[in-house]
Length: 236
Image 1 (tube, rainbow, N blue to C red):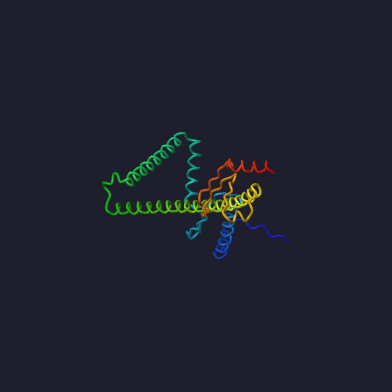
Image 2 (cartoon, helix red, strand yellow; image 1 turned 90 degrees about the vertical axis):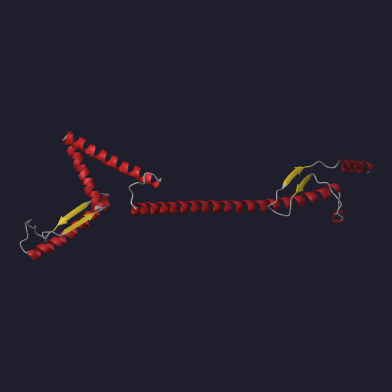
């Protein structure tokens, strides 16, 4: 069996009226919050009880809701009355002009200009503001320098690792080159152990330090060695 319709009229019993007010108020606030969240709406709700107590809810802030309400109301009036529109824009221009003047004055004071008329307290506040601004600039500068140093260290480590790998590859190539020259010129390990000079087709100069600069140069075989090898082959 469904509930019967409730007659919408003032509740005479003060206790029942207070209980109903409390329940309906909570339900109204809940619905307003759900409307703001679900529909992304800006909601402002103001309730005064019969005793004059204030209850309010705002999805953002009550001040911004009221300012937005007044702005929309003035715009609606402007559509009806052109004179009101002119006055509205005149007030807006005056407000913006005053804000610009205040910003320019603050900027000049921060630059150390037009300080006349300021009390010691105002000058102290200005000095504290400049010190805080300077501290923020220094912190930002140190942060940027630290990040740049870390990035340079990272790049330096990568270059060092690449240099070590290249140094290892050069050593391997040099060893292979030595073995190849031994086969070409017929030099045995015994001759190599006696420090017999063998001309290399590729001159590889590398220091013991992996970070040292490595220069690779293409060299021609010695002319006398070539003639000796040629004559020996002819004699055979």
